[in-house]
Structure formats: structure tokens, C-alpha cells
Length: 343
Image (cartoon, rainbow, N blue to C red):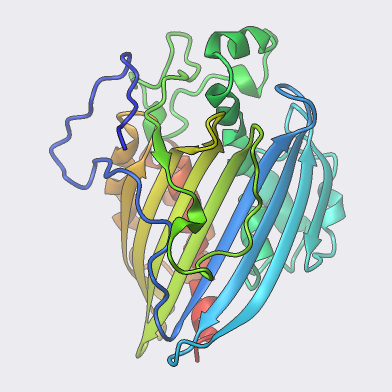
């Protein structure tokens, strides 16, 4: 597959080999005996095209693979959430249920959503895939508009963006590593460019293992998908992690194209409950500056796993981090629970 670069974006030239894009990875390696795999997807579609209500359909599963390679499904989960064009929550449902979730209706699905989620739903513990999907709502809704750029001319979409202040035209300077001052991803007015470094990707379930992923929706229309896989296994008092994170869209040709993809390897000391190592690998990112975010993750080593969701925001905010890498790192907080299911 060939890389699709815009002529407006210069090829990156970084001296640190960690800060480079490696191209699309495999969605799922073979399942290890004695491991647990959590997979989630959030598929996003629109009520009636660009600028209308957005429907999120989340699906997830926890699958344990025993030493003899037999399997047991530990959790099967769903999330449904609708937002209006300004990302205000119109409807939200979760299976299994999360009492208090109804209080999120009427609030925003972007900034502040996770704080409101934590306040409204104390049962969000990471013990079920639905918790990960709920945590992913801000990031998923943020990237959703990328899907339309694969189906319609960008000029047409930009002409339809309201001229009044709103999420679609907000200034992005300093929000993340990719939008650092002077970034190739910034337009002169500080809004984001639509000149993304995208890559075609294979379907998630194109791997040989029929149990690699939960049941995936077959979608041919304009749609965005956030996908996650977290594999956890143990060796003594150490838990090991191999994970992937991908944001991709459908295309009129029937294929898919990714705008964000990370691989992530990590380990945790289960006796101390702390993060022992973490190595992210950039596979697909939209701008030349984005991969620089991987150079800052060592700040998290030694952090209690239970504190990772807040620590990521404290240590990797603004230009120190990538919004989407941060989402992948935050999910490591679920590793102690997942590893406990292997005992």
C-alpha cells in the first residue's frame, strides 16, 4: 500500500528513530495462551449527512484464552450515544447499565465529558469494556468529521462550516504536539488543516483468527470508527501489554483509511501496582509533528496504574502529548483488573 501525503506537508526528518511513523500495523496478533483480550469499536454515522446529529454505536468484548487455548467470553458490552452538531448529548445508553448515566444528557460530549461522567457514574471502574467506550466518547466525536473528507471535496465541506464560532472552526494552536506553534497542521488562522497523512488499512477482522475481534458492524456508508485492542498476560508478578488504537473511515471504494493508529507495549509491576515500562509506536498520524509525542511518555514510568487516567492528563497535556496517544495510554489503567482475570 502506498502512503498518501499532501503536497502541502513536508516529509518528517527526525533524528530520534522513535519519532517516526511506521505505517499500518496488524490489527491483532495471534492470541497468547494464558491471556485476556479486550476489544472495543465505536462506529459513528450521521442522521442525514454533514452537520446533522451523530450516532455512536459502541461494541466491546473481553475474551480470555486459557493455557490450553480454550476461550471464555467474560464480557459483551454495548454503548449507544447520540450527539447534536455541537456535540451535546441527546441520548446515552450502556449495556451493562451504568446508573446515573442519564444525567449526561444535555451536556457536552467534548471537553469536560469525562469529569461529568466520573461525577455522575461512580461505577465507572474499567471492569467492563463499556467503561472504555464511555471514556472514548470525547476523542471519538472529535475525529468523526474526518470521515466526510473521504467522500466529499474538502472545499465543499469547508463552505458548509458555519462562520460563527464553534468546534469545527476553533483555534487549535497548542492543543497537542501535532498543533504546536508553527506546525504544518495549522492554517494561518490557527485552525487545523485538512491535509492529513492518511494510510489505507485492512479491515480489523482480516486476520486469520475468527475470534480476534468481537462481532463488527458491516458499514458501507459514510462512517468513522474508533477501534481498540488490549492484550494482557502475566509472568509472575509482571503484567505485559500489547495494544493498538486506530481511527479510520469508510471510503466510497469500500476500503478503509486511517488517520490515527498507534501500537503500544507496556509492563506493570503487580506487586507495587506501578507502570514499569511503556513503548508507543506511531503507525499512522496526520501531521509531521505528531510522532514527537512518543518521546515524552517516559514521564509516566513509576506511576500507580490506578492513577494513570489523571496522570496522563497532568504529565502529557498541551504540546507535551498527542490527544489520541493519551487516550491509548489512559486505558492502561484497566490492566490491573484485566490481569486479575488471569489469576
